[in-house]
Image (cartoon, rainbow, N blue to C red; front, side):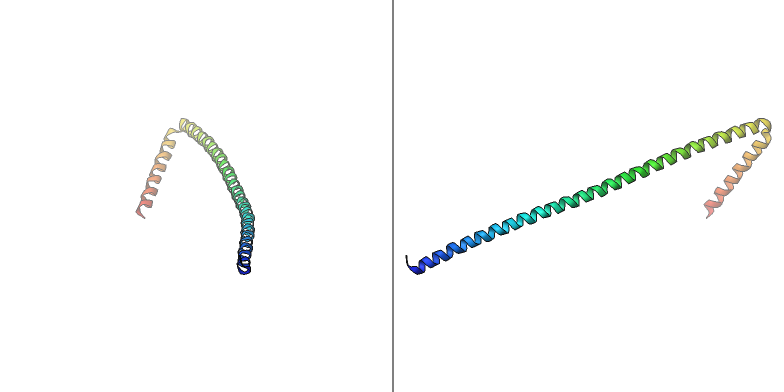
Length: 120
């Protein structure tokens, strides 16, 4: 082997070694970047999960509040209706003609109101 061939072989070996070192460094850098990117993706996923849980909890709380308020309103309406029915029954026992006349007038007024609304 001549000196030139030896120099070329040495250069090829050194170039391969340099390429291998560069590839190793690039691989290490890619792994580090991949690990960091993976951690960032996990952080983002955790944050999104927390937001979703917070929204779900808030919505659940709002639904429970609305349900409780609706239940209270329905209970109050039932009590008022029962009181109203009891009052009308008592008035009917005392003056049936007046109660019937008021009921007929209320039905007539309701019919006229519906007729007026449907004309528009």
